[in-house]
Image (cartoon, rainbow, N blue to C red; front, top):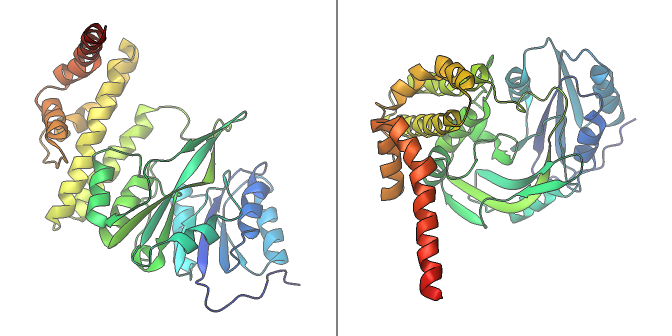
Length: 340
């Protein structure tokens, strides 16, 4: 017996893709938050990625209770492969990805669809980090509507952490032919870059409706691992090859590459000698490539930082880590003396 309500034909179908693997403890909270959305015209695709616990049976139970739920059982292939399996079968006009250990507010889709601009192809929204004892909202812009190229510039220059897959509602026609890179970590940013390249208009809504669970046992993004972080570079290198005949997109991709190299080098600078050696083992080749790449910059200061890193990563990092804070303290002290 179906528990799904009657749906108005005027309401666009939203496909919610939820990859499921070893989250027996959290799955009910996740799926219930989607099933009980105030917006009802949903296609909920649960992709059981060979989960060894009770998740597969839980997915089947949801499908038996609500005919909006569709279950895919597949051998374990990782998060990207599971998301791709959902993309293969989705039929909605809009697509939302939700990780199975997270959850969304019950009015998430109603709010997003009511507030979206009709020109927008990708609607990004705020989220909160959910710790055991607190929630920390992450809101990066005020209400914003812009062209895809402007949004790409914000992402690849690292001005805001926009390269997440699950904090966005996508028009299905934009991403229907895109797929996540399989077999590697840090697959979100390449997918988002491709999606922005394909779309016409990007919208940001400062509404924190997605809850990203932190400090979960087994969470793959919790610890910094050079062998995994290297996948960021490899993924972009793959896209640079894929879009070899698209010079404009290649420029955005190489800018992202330089931005990541600059950030990782700065991160390594403060590590122990052993940790620096480990980072260099995985990243040195990619940093060398980054120093030769073309990039875009939204300001003269941004251009100067990127170019300084390319000329001398160590000198750039030393200036940012030591000289810049000293100058700020000096200027602050002089300002206070003048006020006195």
